[in-house]
Length: 240
Ligand SMILES: *Cc1c(COP(=O)(O)O)cnc(C)c1O
Image 1 (cartoon, rainbow, N blue to C red):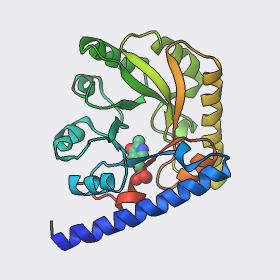
Image 2: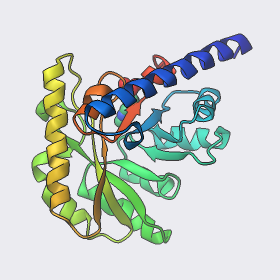
Image 3: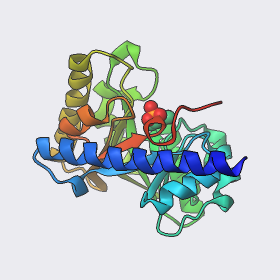
């Protein structure tokens, strides 16, 4: 890559991060919280290490990758000291062994089956893997996540596995330009989060509610998100 291109794009990333932080602070305040109550994840899929490292140097201390292979291929080029990394993309059973122990959290646990596999591989490695359970909150229009109507049963079952610890919930609502529709999905998710928290299930800490991406993170924060996942608003449009 050309040096000038790299430095121009890094300048953009610096400015984008400043703007995102400003928006986060404003939205947190509007929902009666502080800026520090909301964690910003830098979503780094398709982003080259030089730009990820720049975001880290700007203070980003949490990155999210979608694909096991892409993360494992990039990680040795990243300056990850003090930076946490989460897997946020759909995980297949045959990739679990490779990723367990390599990330700080798996946010995309969408079935008992995949949870069982994560638990099994974690026990083999004598570790406990922190996870979020991903629910589909938008009904048919949503493509990923477990059926939210089964949330309690699913979490109850997974909570009994050794080697895995549920730390909260994650969702990707269906894309919508309709602000009210977005709000409704996020607030339904928040309600689910609060309901499950109130059940005080053993081995389950409902601490993290991961929702909101580049187009809707302000709405998500106002509806109760405490972890937002921001990709294109930070790094620019993705080129695959
Ligand atoms: C890509 C991705 C994001 C970030 O998307 P942007 O719209 O670029 O912010 C967040 N969460 C998940 C699970 C993703 O796959």
